[in-house]
View 1 (cartoon, protein in one colour):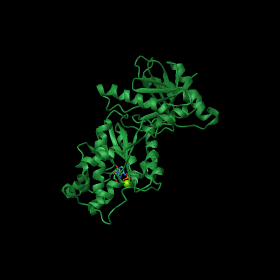
View 2: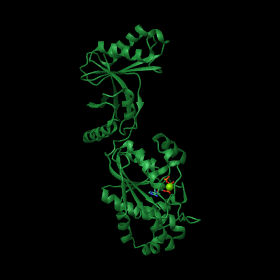
View 3: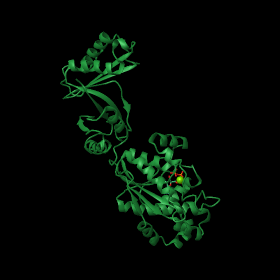
View 4: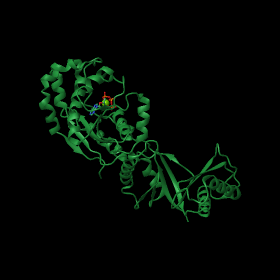
Length: 393
Ligand code: ATP
Ligand code: MG
């Protein structure tokens, strides 16, 4: 009797040489996190080029596997003995489970795709596919259609078992979280920065988060939102930390110092300076922000340059060339859109001048920033930090 499992596959392209071992290690960590707290203990078994999950109900394994970054294909399967007879019986079992039985369903165009990951299997792939195909024709009376099948039967043999499946889905794709190091995400409450964080994770960056609030000039609503966003993003990596830093007083000081039209970009420079210092404390080697070129006045090329001038860390902007509709569609897909639409008191809209300078240069900030005594301000902001772990509990 065949048993259910889920097969996970990953893109092989980048898996040359030493990278492969590392990649698989990070993927295993991500899988352990993903199956943590399942209704039954989940076994994770690494085979050449494939990971097999088993132990919990199939639908639960599928749900959990779908959120794992680094997995390109998620495939529910039946596993059975390593013989042609077992494979044939399992194909019948899988088809019966799905369609009820040969007398319960009309003809379906079908194809068999067979792969041997173990070349000592008694039949080669072509002959295995032919053998299974003729079995289905005899038992079910279905026509073969290799180019446009309605039912695709995949049969894979490895050293120990045969796997049969009728369905596969795309996984999250990308590189497993951690494989590219660690970054600090500047997270506001809008659509953009959570999507930027997700895209950074998808390129293998383990992410910490920093959110700046307008406290004491604003209430806690933006922090609640940031918390909820990190909780949602934590599904993709686990162990996420959210650092909350109140900058209301510093914002007011900038305004008092006469920032005027430069206020918004000056605030952003302060955020990035502070994030740079925090990143060094938490061991992050890059910053991530949600800017998209030209989306708002503060996101012109000139302003981006003025902002990134205050950090020597790479300031990554994964959404720089994305349209707003693309960003919102992705936010829906990853489950952050609903949180982002909630109202909040955003610190950026606080003290925003009627006109925002679109063509700033770093030297314009010299006078205002000298009055801020940044050398003392940044450590003071860091001392006021609150750390949350939204994924726990
Ligand atoms: P978002 O949709 O992410 O809020 P936005 O379109 O509102 O972005 P801006 O407000 O110009 O754009 O912010 C640009 C980027 O600066 C944000 O994507 C985020 O990375 C960072 N940022 C802005 N405000 C904050 C904040 N309060 N705390 C942390 N980071 C922020
Ligand atoms: Mg914003």
